[in-house]
Image 1 (cartoon, one colour):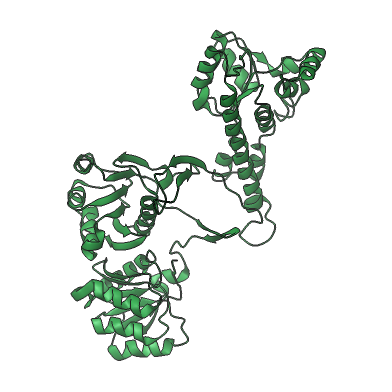
Image 2 (cartoon, one colour):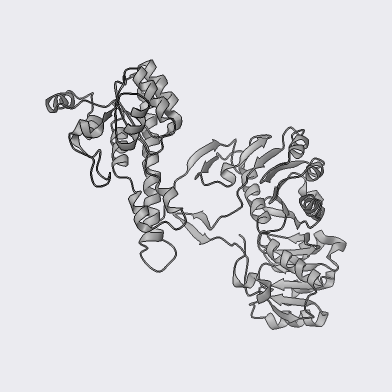
Length: 520
């Protein structure tokens, strides 16, 4: 098994979680500990004997701690390949003892740069130099050294010490984790330099783009059963780090639909429910009932298209109440994702064996969107419905009478909700809830027909939102013929005058926003 006994350890950590227990366990097994600065002080405070690194090197820590471990007596002890007789001989001639274990984690650079009001100098000072050097050296020399960068692995360290050391396979895995740790750290530093500290030009997009994710789960399959899939996380919260409270394992398609549902729900500040299937809304609604607005929002969202909502995914931007849970329990639902669940709601929903319940307290805060293409990736700023034309005060009335407050509230709702619909998108709404959704058609006329068809009698007296302009009056005419009373759309077609003329002829209120919300 190629176990290598652990007799001498170098410990230098910023995150001191579990440090005392590790030090005691190593000392009880007779392991010599060499350590640095505050780490050595913490170990010594527990009563464990520790050798300060300056005692080992014969050179004091200097430059406010910037130079502590960058010394041959440290790095030769880490890098000596003990399988090589010549390396062993050189260590003996130089009077350097090898290290069998290196325990290091790094300065909190990512946390520092995310702190409000932090200065550039403070950020730069958190760029670790000695730590990554030790981690990389130990990882390179994994045939002779075990390297640990995660405090969660400390119990494994003590088990290995008692078992006679880590096996070669274990040391390889520890080295892989160590290189991932330093790679993610370097990505964070380089990204901050390129995006914030020293951008190459005036564009908001950096000349260097990189990211780091850790695998969280291997999924049963991908979009289809013949495709393999896995979930990765950047540990910044959001859906990838949601807590699953109940139900079957999440699937690839569950994650895709849940993300779309969360995005739609969090497009509203009011209590909102979005029901999604195949990344398109079956229904979106906001609730205003002071007794239980989220239950009302769910009732209205479900009423939009009960047939399609069967087997759908639900997201809310408020905790799920007992009343909402009772409503959801009556319909087969794949996933419910919410910032929280009332205890009674959980008790009701967990009676359903397979329904997946996710607690995800963080709001949907994506600021950028990436899409892989062959040979590269596209990056755009996220569509947060924050363009100038998304403010109803900036809308231009081009037809009909100004909308009364209730109608305007429905238009504002429809405009925000249509962003969640795949283009070409037409959305009909009433009482701040969708009543008909026409999505994903390759022409706007068919999207209008689909929305009207799904709304049925509810189309009469509803309002409509179009994610992009009407290229001809024909799509608008479908809405007019169905009894739609008001329309909001971006405008910008070369035939805007014809479209506006059709609206005027029908006496339909129409606003132009000047902003488009394509979703592909």
